[in-house]
Length: 99
Image (cartoon, one colour):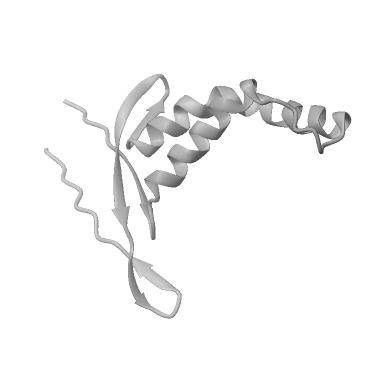
């Protein structure tokens, strides 16, 4: 039986930042134009961000360590890198094969 896992190795996984980005994107459609911004700039800003609104759910899932690959939802394994020296970081990941 084949088993697949998805993971990332990173120095820092800041779940709260991903959640804030998702919240920001989810709120764009309800933005009201501030009085101190020119209409064209407001239109341009909102228009440039709108394509990313649909990505909010994916970003929220990523923050919750879930990722969709080829239509399948996987639990994301997060491996935190440890500092070795200078700009060198490493992590050990155990991989098993059943033969």
